[in-house]
Image (cartoon, rainbow, N blue to C red; front, side, top):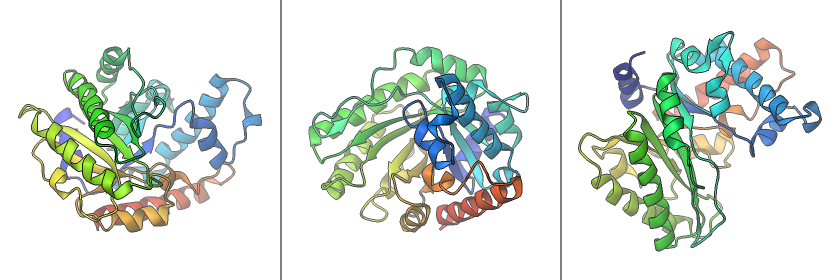
Length: 295
């Protein structure tokens, strides 16, 4: 796929984006959910090899290329890996799936009700390598725990500062200021976030485009103004700890948002499943998430 074809697919395609970007801190939990305990590896390299095997199995599954998965977000080691001897980004594009790279380095401790991203000192190098491998965009996550106006403003500003740097490399950033769904001030935080993102979008140049990955809001269709904004390519939703059923129910209430689920996509996959069982379970999740994204 050319960059123009990938842009069109993300902008108007009927489907969702798979989140396959668990990194160092979340990999053991992802493997445990897959039925692989920590006694299965003796080093970090062995751990990442196991998670790459799981991701390769997903990518090679026939149902993953059925047209319902528009894109996939990858961890850096997955981007650098191969699927049956083919570089992972190329393997995805051959299946009609647009590749994105997770670029953040994790979260700072909470301050002013938010967790900012840690510094990304090698962001330019990551972007250059992503372009070299044919990636379309990036993704970076920060967290909002409380409805603190100053904290949320700082959080969103940091996302857009990095976002502009990523755009300069010709990539499309997915900006993800996640509102913690367990926050006691969640609805108020949603409203502040809407305002802050709107202000940052208005400040972009007319040629600049970003994507948003947002928690499902308490008030359905709260983010409709962002979905309609001319600087937005697509708005996707994270599952945020919801089960597949819960996340799909909430997503279906929000017209124009599509899914970008991790747990909601992978929660019932197991290493011990036969290829037929694995494809059946993955296919059922893909169908359910696709239906909610198109509701």
